[in-house]
Every structure is written in structure tokens, then in C-alpha cells.
Amino acid sequence: MSEFYCKLSRMRGKLRAWNKEVFGHIGTRMAELEKVMHTAALQYDMERTVMSKIAYHEARAAYMKQLEGDANTAFFHAVVRQRQASNYIARIRSSTRQWLTKIEDIKCSAASFFETLFESDKDTNRHPVLPFTLPRVSLGDNERQLVLPSMEEVREVMFSISLDSAPGPVGFGSGFYQACWGIIKEELVAVV
Image (tube, rainbow, N blue to C red; front, side, top):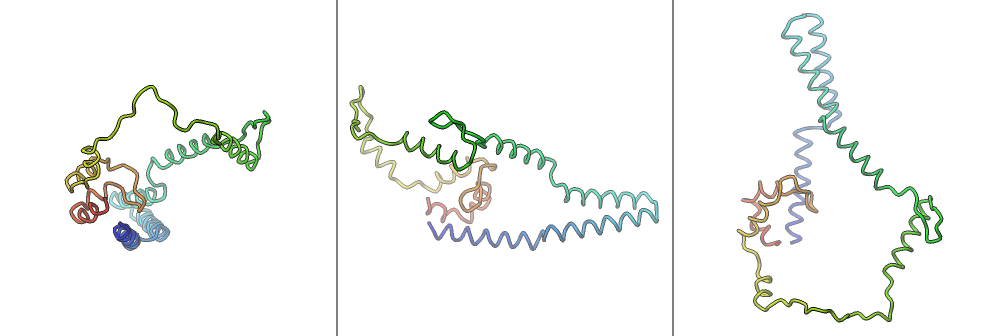
């Protein structure tokens, strides 16, 4: 299992290096696009032709797209900021009914609350009598659960996961595994 994850980690590093080689450093790319835009603007100022105007607007559009990014980026960041603000605890009432506003006081109060909540009484009965019988797993069911999944079962599950799902611990989402299924299927099934 760890060998598979090591391979994925090495591939991740190589993909990052490839990304830098192909797409380059963003600062350098911005400088190049700005230079192209200024050159196109100068040419349009000198020539005043339709073709030079189109070339200038195309260069400006490429520069602005790189500068501003996707139109959804501002919306995404606004949603994240709103979620962070709603997840922030500015104050909390202690067990003595006083408002605590200092972060350390809030942490101590929360820790104290949960320590008391999860403390166990030594006098409690750990196995209460239930008014019903608990279901039992039969030997046949247990044996079926212990059988390793087939390659087709793993493939079926892998391809049922949405392409937009969150990436795993190595940073690859289900889209990667689906696209590379032919290459990684044996190792992936062995890990499962």
C-alpha cells in the first residue's frame, strides 16, 4: 500500500514540475502578456487599421484574463470569507454565566465543558439490558465481507464517484483514477 502512495507522490512531484515547464511562472507570463499588449497598442496607434485594433483587443483580453482569472473566483472567495466569519466564535458564555471574549478563555471553557461532558461515572452500568435482541452477523455474511473485492467491483465503485469529488490524501481526485484506470488498476486493486 505504501509503495502505491509513494508512486503517486512521486508522480505528483513530476506533474508539478511539468506544469511549471509547460505553463511557466505566472509572474513571467504576466510580464510577457503585458509586453505583447503594449506592443499591440503601439502598433494600433501607428496604423489605425481594423486588424491592428483586433490584435490589440485580443492581447488585452489575454492579459486581463490572466490578471483577473475566472469570473467565479471573486464569488468563491466571498463565500469562503462568509463561511470563515460564521465559523468564528467571538464570545462564549462560561458555566458561571459570564461572557468570555479572549481566545484563550474561550478555548479553556470549551475544553472544560467537553471534559465534563465526556467524563464517565464509575457507577454506571456499561451493558444495559435492552428490550430487544441485537442482530448478529451470520458466518456466511462474515465470510462474504472478508472476501477481497474483484477488479470489476473496484472499477464499478471508482467510476461511480463524481469527477468533482474531493481529492484523496495524495491530492488526486476520482477523475485522475478514472482517466488512468488502464495504467493503475492492478496496483489500485492491490491497495484496496
